Image (cartoon, rainbow, N blue to C red; front, side):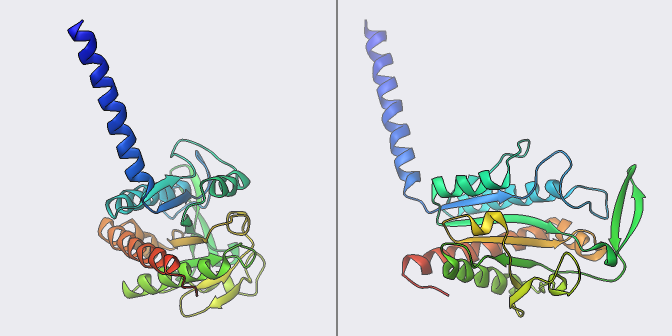
Amino acid sequence: MRKAVLLVFFLLLTCVWNHAVFASDAKLPVILLDSGHNPPKSGAISVRGIYEFDYNDQFTAMLAEALRKASFHVELTRLPDKSIQLNARADLANRLMPELFLSLHHDSAQLVHLESFDINEITAYRTKKRITGYSIFVSRENAQFQHSMLFARQLGEHLLQLGRKPSLHHAENIEGENYELLDEALGIYQAGFVVLKKTKVPAVLLEVGVIVDEDDEAYISNPKNREKMVQAIVDAVNITVKKIRLGESD
């Protein structure tokens, strides 16, 4: 009888504890991270013959951990071994209604700027001339465009502080590019991407670096550089959330 009473007490205590932890976590600002593309073979192929989704997943995992340590509640649109379609990513954001939505990608370039070669029994591409840096995309069709721009500017400013420069190749007047530059100094573009225009929360897509450029791929693959970029993003998220809660906009 005593053992039964102790077991019930333990279970009740566990429920109370779990409820307290959940309630405490629920008060934290929610950030939804979207690792771009789906496994097993999706996105650009880097100069090392690695698919983009792998870079996205690794960077997303690092950023998620850093954000949690910075007292944010992090949700993911997909786990590393899972697939999810674009509309479903936006639908998830609209159900969760996080403070911010950030889609993470690693960049390529149009074929006119690339040359092919074989590596690891696959055809990969590398740039004919240097194309380096990050790119940031927002959508005017987003329900909270001004707050999206606020987030985008914070990201750009913090990445610039690391010495990273924006890549402007997406503004070229060639097929597949010709995106409108909203802020050339910070590398912010207008784009009608599904995950940006269909979300009802501030949404930004970040191209972390150019994986078809040998120099930029080496930079973003360096663990110390990744840590610096992750911290820059955490700082940008922190400032953006505070400004939005204070009623500020771009």
